[in-house]
Length: 113
Length: 114
Image 1 (spheres, each protein chain N blue to C red):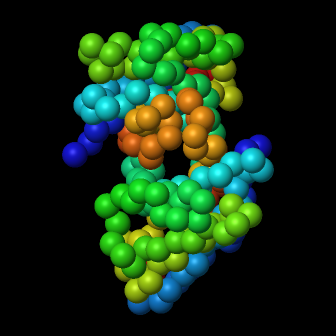
Image 2: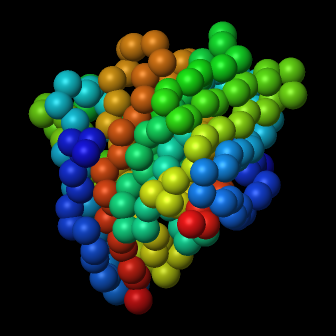
C-alpha cells in the first residue's frame, strides 16, 4: 500500500530552467509534507516543508505547492543548478511532523549543463 | 551538516548473525527514528523511540529491536540476519512535541548480509 507516490523515477532539466517534481498521497490523515534531497552515500537532507494549513511555501530557489483536494504536492526549483542533481524524496507525516515519515520512492533529478 | 552521526558507515555480516548499529542524535532533540532503505526504494519506517521507550513501529518483525539512552543516542539491533536485510539503515532525530517539526538524518549505515 503505497501511501506516498512519486510517479516519475527520473527527470532531466536544462541548467537555468525550472525543475518540477511531483508527489501524490492517499492518506487523508497526513497534515505535514516534506521534501528531502539525497546524494549517493549520504543521508537525506531536509529541503523544505509545508503544513496542510498552507498551499505554498517558499525558501529561496525552492517552492512547494500543496493541493489538498487533489492530494498532490509539487516542488519547484528555479533556476536549476548542476548541484541540484540528486534523488528527491517526498515524505508525509501526521500530527504536524510528530508521527513517522512515509516516503515516496524518489525522483532522480539530473541538471544538464 | 545535521549533527546526527551513525556508526559504522559500512558493515558486512553473515546470514544468521546479529548486528548493532549506533546513532548519536542532534543536540536538543528528544526522539530518534530508524528507517531502512532498500535499493531503489524510499526509506521505510522501522520504529521510533521517545524518552527511552518505543513510540510507534512499522511493519518489521520482532528481530528488529532498539534502545534509546538518556543522552538520546540510540541503537538498532537486528538478530538472525537475512539476505533481505541488506540495505542502508538511516537514523533520524527530531524534537517531538513541537508543531511542524522536521526530522534530520544521519549519513546511514550500509549493511550487507552475505
